[in-house]
Amino acid sequence: MSVEKNRNLFFVLAGLVSSGADAYDHSDTEVSALAERIVNVDISENIRIWFSRARTGQVEVNPYWPRGCALSTACFFIEEGFFDIDKFFSFFESTAIADPIGMHDLRSWIFELPQALLYMETQSDIQSLWDEYNRIVNKRIIKWISVIDEAKNTARRFYGDNAPEMSFSPNLFAAYSTDFVRIGNKIITIAAEPDVESMLHETLHTVVAAYRDKIMTFSEQNSLKGFATRDKMMELGYMDDGSASSIIHAIEECFVRAISVVLASKSDERLYAHASYGFVGVPFIASHFKKICPTVNKFGAFIDTVFSDMTNDHWVSGKWDRI
Image 1 (cartoon, rainbow, N blue to C red):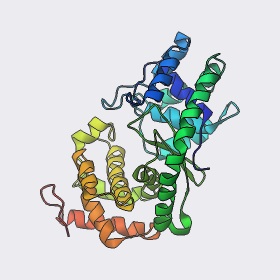
Image 2 (image 1 turned 30 degrees about the vertical axis):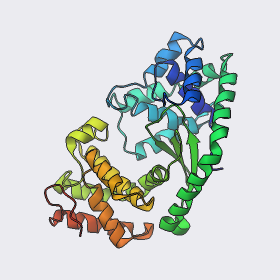
Image 3 (image 1 turned 180 degrees about the vertical axis):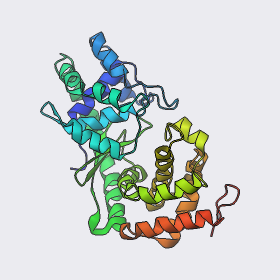
Image 4 (image 1 turned 135 degrees about the horizontal axis):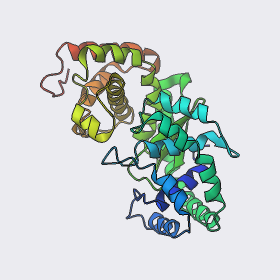
């Protein structure tokens, strides 16, 4: 199934909206009207407070990072009220995302998600809201399918027979963020609408994560050299501190961004846009990817080449050396 409408996810989104989240596209009249209806639902103060704990304020551009992401992805590990919390945390920790308050607090809070979902499901108005959400999604699916198919076809050229199953689950209330969840060999992108670059981006995290040992070796000697700007990474939440794991996370993100842009056939302007956000090594990585054209089976050697050339002064004064 290319588009998955997850009922648990909708209840989470409704809970977040009811507690004050307003990251949806306010120019989208259908979504705005639905959000207004959600806000007017008589939800208990305790439930609103519980959902409000997703807002850590760690990242100014997205105060719901990373707990909003955790809530969204956790929905896919709940079935008939049973929350496989160990499997969820196995996935969540594999993403190398750190909770700003602490993993113990995150675990004790998110453990209560099934009860919060059960409360939301029993509200008298929630079924009509879910029906309206489905109506909006169903109108947009036809436009989405061609984008999803393009992402799948592009992925097959890179992965070959090892291509993951790709699916999309709409989150109409988060216009400017994208999350993903991995269930077995399936990568589910969670966003307001599908985009080829974004869907490829999410699948590539699992590829680059397999080479964190190489990234760690490079970072131990060179830190963020040529790859990312520390202040920007802290501001955007890709680094929560100056720890080794944070540096690895930032460099990994550079690889994922560069390769997804190239595979999606986006312009060089898109590469420089990523660089302007602080991922300054994205154009450098992309230039190598275009030249070498590695498949997933040759990815380790590709990373080695990028690191070697980065340390051999191909990076000059923070500018892309078109070699």
